[in-house]
Image (cartoon, rainbow, N blue to C red):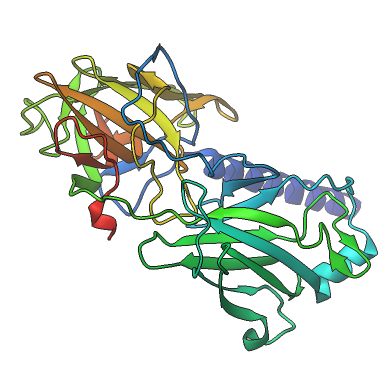
Length: 387
């Protein structure tokens, strides 16, 4: 019997570890509750869908250039869950799956890195006199030696250089502009990014955007508005009053409608649901990506294309796998064109989540953040409340 005890002990420990890992995996894949909003249970993970595209002619002759997507050898991607844009350049460095000793030395002790910024507005014009303030990350150097504060020259250009262990973080500010916040990684995981004691590519020139304040307009809106309505029932929503229409609220005009259905298996991790957003009376909706680097994260005006009549969201999952998942990503937003008695208004939905409700399993909960330009036939989306 004593000879069997070690084998039995090892078997028991193995079973306990497997059970704990299984429970941990389930916890991480479940949507979970949004504890910051009583009565709401978050549904799903981020994704996007487009369907039934509707053409729309230009609403404004003056359109800002898109400096937030690919621009030359540089693009800006959003930082996960943060108010910052991550600068990603087309570096063409050789792949290096395992860090070289020189790369590890740079990460552990720091190497000299440099980057030149050309600051432009949303139309591509250089912004002179903008203040660039930040710090290189290096735990071995005191803060006063790795911090910096400098202004762009007449061409909107400034060069930053210092010894660092991987990245530099900085903000750009100027009166009459919306603040921008960026991060640039000198260390590039999976690539040979070190040569002769320096981070490479050495001193790349990248163009970054400082969005100008044009003509902000007064808006109406709500932040993290919680709504609830019965499943398998169509519920209209009034942007102006910020409420569902009767019989589920006190709204007067149904600008968009919501419809939700959910099916639950015996297992708590096996379920499917479907949420449909429809714009009423000939309106339309356009999915777009946020300018995560800027205090003003949205477009100045509605887009010329990409308009659709409705969106179908939802999730299908099994015990251990998400088969499909469609929702509004944190780095996305919707522009909604609303039709009322022949007049057009525009709204921005910056956050939209759906799931359960504390009213019971027969109700759907919606968590919504948006703003509406109440002026008829005015395509201005610049929010005065950001001033």
